[in-house]
Every structure is written in structure tokens, then in C-alpha cells.
Image 1: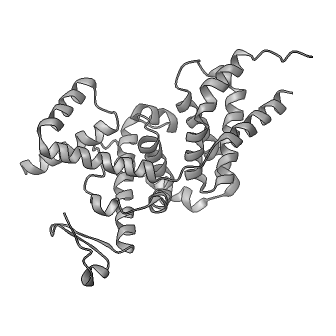
Image 2: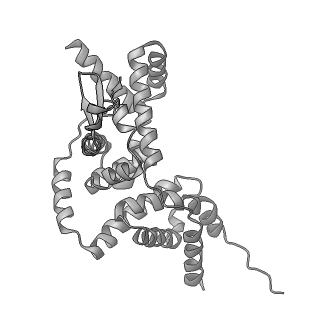
Image 3: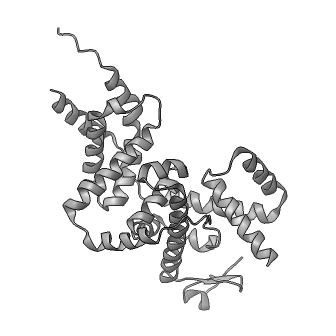
Length: 80
Length: 211
């Protein structure tokens, strides 16, 4: 039971850290735990890997310069 | 030669603070509309609105969040009406009804790295695009764009507790979908057995990866 609680707390803190939802003090405490506790370190690295992979792999439209020009042209027309 | 008219302060704000976010808005719009042309129209409409209402924007504040809010509203109020997606609306109403101020915070931590890292962009994009709109939106805003809970709450007009609970559910659903994709592509998660096999080939070839 204690292990489940610890695991849940760990998940919660890792998630909040990456969501930028920890206050500065909790963030410092969390990072200290990451540096000293292998379980925290593993969970931290795992979560970071997942999020980086999603960010890297998600489809992003290419160079927006054409769209920027189209927006400027449209605004130019409206303003004229 | 006639002199070029001097740029107004609003034009400068528009160019320096708002236009740099076109790329991020394009990505968000693409994952809402599922196609590039509609996404570009939506982004263009967003910028036209922003330009018309630029007096309401305070210089130096959160331009990106402001633009995302305009885009989200334009999508809901105009784009979805135009393309009519009744079944999605019904489902999302149900999802919204079940939103609670659930404080649990989730992560992707119990999805195995080995499975996940074999996935390419198409699979990740498909999994995200198959999420219901409300869930897709929070994942895109939080995990892709890095907005805080407070910013997301302001963009989508819901309490922070709802943002948290939607993220929790969205990540769980995404995790399920990614796991399904992995299984469809022959990656089996043998939890507890500490082994990962790649399809049937693993039975005859040495493709088994030790943890």
C-alpha cells in the first residue's frame, strides 16, 4: 500500500514538474529527489523521453513564410 | 519618390509580437481541422481578427495565449459550424459533462519506452488526431506548446481543475491509443515478463529486446 502511495506521489510530481505546475520550492525539492533517488530519476527520464518524442514526432506544417505573406496581403487589402 | 507611410504602433506590435507565432498556430490549427488548407484559413482568420481587435491586446503581455484563444473560438464558432460535425459535438458534450475537478496528475510513465520510441510521426500524429476535441486541445496546448494550466484555463475558458482532469484523461486515452498502434504494428508489451517481442519475427529471428 505504501509502495502504491509512493508511486502515485512520484507520478503526480513528475507530471506536475513537466507541466510547470510546481511552485519554486516544490520544484527544488523535487529536483533534489531526482538527483538522489534512482526511482525518481528513472521516472523523470522516462517522462522526459516520452514528451520529447511526442513533441519531435508530431506533424508540424512547414515554413510559415507564405502564410505570413498572405496574412500581410489580406491586412493590406482591409486597410486600403 | 513618395515616402512610405510610417508604421503605426499597432502595426509594429502586430509584426513583432503576434506574427512570430504563426508556426505554432498552424500546428494547432492543423490538428483541429486535420488538413493544411483549412488550418491555414483558420490561422489567417485568427490574425485578421487579432488585427481588428489589436487595441484590446496589451503590449508585452502573453500574445501567444491571446492568439490561441482567438483561434480556438474561431474554430468552435465558425469553422465547425461550416463543416458540421454533429457526432463529435455530441460526444464532446458527454466528455464535458464528465469533466470533474479531479486533482490527479498523470504522465506517460507507464507506457514502455521501447514500444513508444519505435513509433514514427504518423503514428503519434494519428493517435493525437483521434482524440476527442477537448482532450486533443489540452494535449496540444500543454505537451506541444508548453502552456501552463492557468494559460490553458484562460484559452479554453474552463477552471484549472478541469484542465487537470482533462489532461489526466487525455494522456490516459493517448497512452491507450499509442499502445494499440504499437500492438497493431507487432510490438507486444509483456509487462512483468520484462521482454519485448517484435511480431512473429521475434519467434524465429533474434529480435527480442531485453529490458
